[in-house]
Length: 167
Image 1 (cartoon, rainbow, N blue to C red):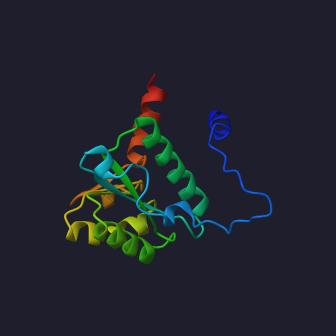
Image 2: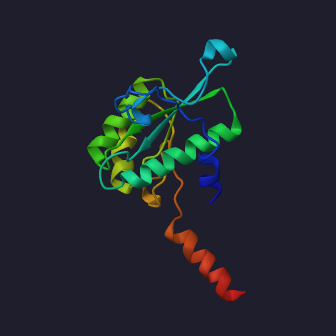
């Protein structure tokens, strides 16, 4: 509900009568994003590669996660952070390409991808470049060698359920 209220506060673009604009490129294809130019702030940038499924079967979730990341950065107002969103295409091959693209564009940390298969595929380029990766998968077997698992793991759920049952 709060998000809907915030949408109404967004600046609205006024179009001139009789003049139509073509469709804009998706936000995730406009790179880099989220912060003013480094020269304007005088602050060194931390480039964060966001590896999200912005197309394919998980695209809706990927776009929601991208919107959440943008909102969080907007709330933080940190000019030192710059997001580099890259589309994993909801596939292992897409995740590998997305990781390589983000790293080649200067990402010093990768956030994502979403699934086990995408995480396993993106881990190779991340490890080869010594870039840490914070993955959203819940598969603990993916953790290690610079890959951190951020999803809720089955072991965490079991401990929480056992604790709740005991209390």
